[in-house]
Amino acid sequence: MKKIIRITTVPVSLKVLLKDQLKFMSAYFDVIAISSPEKELKEVEKNEKIKVIPLKLTRKITPLTDFISLIKLIRILKKERPNIVHTHTPTAGIIGMAASYFAQIPVRMHTVAGLPLTVATGFKRKLLVFIEKLTYACATNVYPNSKNLRNFISENKFCKKEKLKIIGKGSSNGIDTDYFKITEKIKKESEKIKKELKIPKNAFIYLFVGRIVKDKGINELINAFKKIKQKKDAYLILVGNYENNLNPVKKDLLNEIKNNENIVEAGYQTDVRPFFAMADVFVFPSYREGFPNVVMQAGAMEIPAIVSNINGCNEIIKDGKNGIIISVKNEKALYLAMNKIYTDTELRKKLKNNCRTNIIKNYERKYIWKELKNEYNNLLKLNNV
Image (cartoon, rainbow, N blue to C red; front, side, top):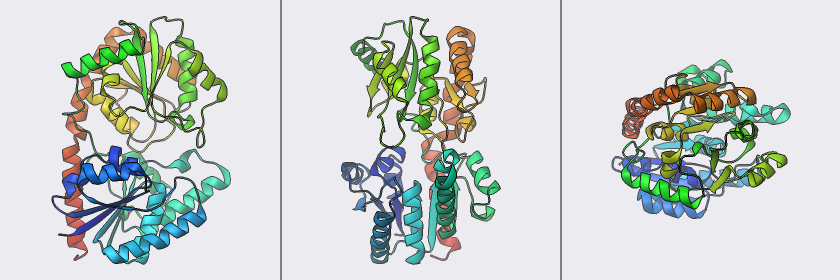
């Protein structure tokens, strides 16, 4: 069996973003996962039924820690001798691809699922551009998970066009449409949670799922919702964790979240389906993405979405067909879209009817998995491995 090592910066990426993919691949390859030594790594080992190796990696720029991790990873790769190393996320990308290059691994694949440099400025942007170019230089193959991301990388000459390819029609893992669907059980659970959160039965619900941080457009979302507040039945539910040390929301808006009775903080949830089931519209005004799973999840759960005109989002959502696309960091446009979808029942019904069909047709996860498996086999053949 050919050996593949998959590397992410933090194990939650393996556990959530790549859920069940490694288990699928392990029927065809010897799969090992490497990520930071957090509790989720053990869960990945158990759930995906694969070998895992802990390696300290951080999402911040930490030169000394990163150098030590690079040396350790080179040793691991020389010991394991994988045929393919496949990395995801920025830190895992640069360390994983550099280590694979020095360890002379024949097939070095890196998936790009968003570029932090697109919202960075000054020296930080220059540094991130350098790191990205270095990552791609060390890789034999680079996989942007959206068309716009591929175009951005190509137009900015981060690497040769020949290295770039999209698996399927985009996305790193696709969507399990059997799991993400409205059922009677989910509806009952949804009503129960709604009651616990003290949300009125007939409330109009805007839903956000993701990290509660500036780059997800939370500042604009809270300001836009403040203008909606005259509609007494309108509620905003925030599902996700804060990251105040990395990318904080404005202090006055944090206070608004705490004090506004119509804003509900649900925290991180292992199962987001009941929240989608109670929502009228999903709002995702993010500044940057690769190919966002949550937008696909909303679609599979028959929920129309308001999204920013950014990578991934503007491929999953077709404006006026299964959602509304607004310009990035545009609070006024966001408010107008939120208000329109609230007032226009016919539009809402039309958008809702198109949501699930689009996801099943283009982003079912088994289709993505098979396409990736074929890519592994083709690369092994091309490199005579």
